[in-house]
Amino acid sequence: MRGLADEFGDSTNAIRKELNNLTDAGLLIKVAEKNKIDYQANIDHPLFSNLQDIIRKYLGLDKLLATVLERMGDVNQVALVGDYARGVDSGKIEVQITGKELNADYLELLENKIESLIHKHVVFQIQNAITDPEALILFQNQD
View (tube, helix red, strand yellow):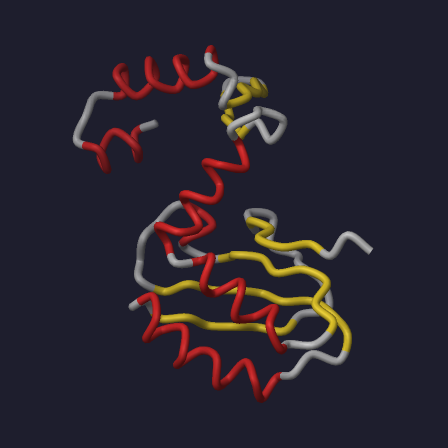
């Protein structure tokens, strides 16, 4: 909460009230563990996918995702990791991709193309599995 309060220039009490309002509205789920409270997006809320789309468009992730899936091969997962996954707008977007027979050469070309589209530094990594516990899954093959 302190981090959010600093980022928004508001008090922790005001942040707590807003988090409670979002929880009461059903947009967030409150999870209490010992002396710590975590908030998670409620993926079952009817507006979740709409809000997710808005955030993706704001960050330019919609263009990034469409471009990756276009000619990458048999993509299984695309995940946002690093600063953006933690909610920090550092200007560097880190993306991990899993799948079979992925086109690594195409990814190198994509980095520059996407950077010019969304005006942020983009780093792609091909992985066997997404292991970052803070990863945000942007795409998952349903097969």
